[in-house]
Image (cartoon, rainbow, N blue to C red; front, side, top):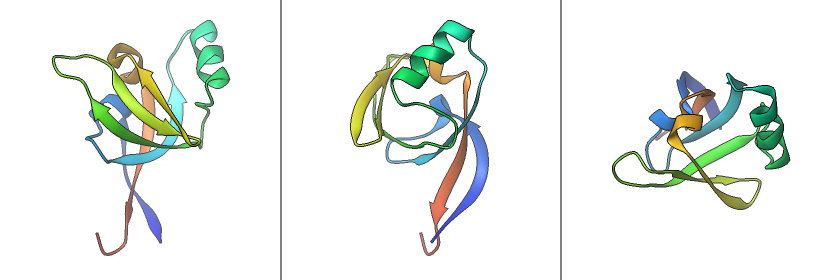
Length: 86
């Protein structure tokens, strides 16, 4: 069973951490692009890789892997989830 632990921004999650997407402080065109990629509020995501020196993040979302610039990830809220017993 999973429970919400805290709220964070997507860029603050570590490799292997995940949660459900929340509010996005993006311009309408950027928000539309995120929706086209499957990144909508309530969607579960997991960080699979973090590039060094502020490079992009690799996410697993809806069975696909996507790369997202950190500047964008800083504007995306996430409800961080953990599993009981972890």
